[in-house]
Image (cartoon, rainbow, N blue to C red):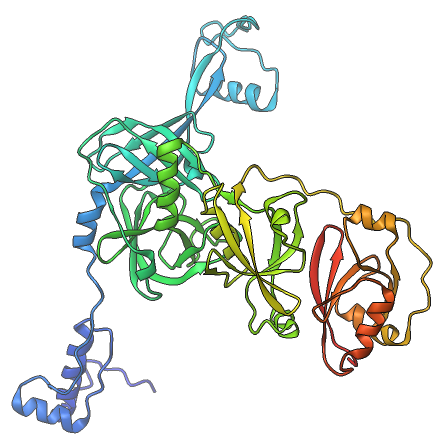
Length: 521
């Protein structure tokens, strides 16, 4: 039977040591510490006898208190509302029925006549050439923060994108119509200006000092709830999400309306601009991203000075260098940016860069990952003469390139088909062992592909097919040696160790990339 206490069952007194253990345990639990301490029978007895707390237990470390921090930075955070203007036809009357009729007319094209509520008769339709009224309709809500006391405010570009009117509301409830000074969609940063002075501006922190695991808070207007404070930790730095910005990842609760608000460290400094979340539902799911404040500040400075952001470009398409490719090339470690194609006549082409080169440094700065290069080049002023260190066919080279200005992205050109196909010839023994059947490029094919040399793959099987090669690909180099024709390629393959992987640079359409062929697999 269950051991239940009732009035008919007298309670038995516990031994003194046991009572002391329970009291000590309850005190520890009620204290709200972050660690549990287990008190032994002997310690509990000794503590009861001396009536003094144990000095051997480690002091519990409490959670940080953000109250002073919020009081310090909170007044610099603003609520941003956007409106769009829509045209509405002039009409008399009103009421819910007419609003519904107007909704059906405007959004679904249903020709419902206007009814005079006093007479129940259709009203005459307004003339087509009569002027319509413009009405401001709420469009969205976001957040921002004051970056200078004379009224400049930073927020996200997507917060104000497409808005006809922008209203900034301060924590003291004052509202101002804001002018959009500039917005940069590539980094999702925008700068607004309101006619106010003496505003409390935020302080920028050093992103390089941000550590994974440190506490940060966000202040903003999620779901239009002004001055909402959420807290968490930095989960990762330099997180790549496919954008131009290396994001700060946190587990701070960020929801619609938080966009554009500040991410603040425990020193009261802004280290990021809350911009994105990872979500399958549209709401917070434990992962959020902030634009590093150093990136956002550089963009904001250009927006304030010239209304737009000027970035550099060198005219290359790049890709990742995998571990297998790096090892097969003798690069040492996977790093750098693989040049997959070079824009004809562009800065990189004039500098002598070739498809298949691996860019390892730009102006002395290491290109650790392939997407570091667009950020380094983009931050360089157009017209600057910069140095490129590239790894080409087993050795390092230095090239000098003049950075051009990045413009709107051009549409990719259709890949060349390599000319008319030729019947496949029997493959030499060395190439057949790799599963390759190849032929020399004709003069017309070279001109069309803009290649000086190379060998076309006519058929593929075995190890070459497993490496991802296809019919129509053009082999440019093998084992860090440029390929000129079929005879030379056969000789190169024959000299290689039959059991070792072979690195092969090939071109597919407009793109060059590496493949690693593993014989005998």
